[in-house]
Image 1: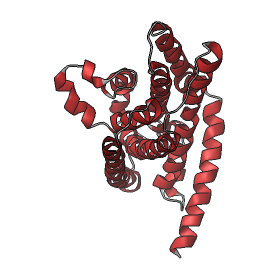
Image 2: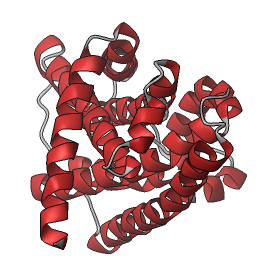
Image 3: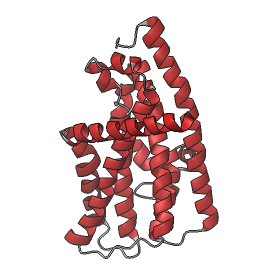
Length: 265
């Protein structure tokens, strides 16, 4: 019974991912946010640090890819249900037999996987255009870190989607949340360069631990103790996000079924 239900959910997630990828791939704003903008950031970073030595190149490539991941989380995952409301299809989705979190999970997975293309584009750009030899120092550990990063971002998106529906005013903060997270999470430079009072804020953000894990495994010099902490924090935050999203979806569905206010702005 449970196994059959999981298989059915997996099929739904696959269909939703395929449909969502087709929709977002034709959206010029999304293409710019998750592919063009990170590539521009990579070009500027590599150009400004051209005279420096060391492993800054792979650091910039990974960091610019992280900016694409965060942009996709903020704009695509956050608006995944908002667009359904604008199109008048949110209520039918609420009434569908498939639970709403399963549908949103498929949308978020498609968005995050699409944004991984920004990391690949930055890598190819540095290798082909600039002629820099790039090598991931710990490819296996990097792959594990990337999988945990994708999972954490998808779970984070499960929180953003119902929040943007229940509290539409939060969307006014979207643009303002993009670049501060780039800075606080150390995507393009270490947070040690920031004022000390910002450090606790960084520790409370899952993208910071994702950036830590990806940077350390790609640039080398990784300590297994620190890497285990990064992975543990990603799993911890993922669990918190997953549990919190269940409550948020219940609030959203209650408004849809009892208050009939789901479609109101």
